[in-house]
Length: 81
Image (cartoon, rainbow, N blue to C red; front, side):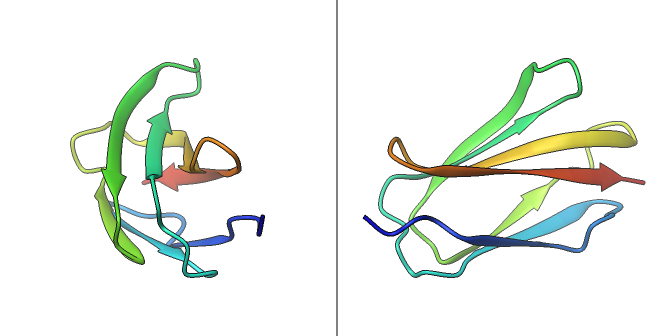
């Protein structure tokens, strides 16, 4: 199985964050947003190669974005300014 690879931009961001899968496999693609305390604050499922994530409802700070499926995932730290 090919490992999921994602690109997230812009980072830092003030509101919207683009998430793009680089390997074209988006079956059961899940995006989860966690705060620095490890609390899940947003999650969504998509079948699109690119997704816009709206961080505007959340306060400025650092967040972790977990992207992938049940078999493989990637976690990236993003900064909301």
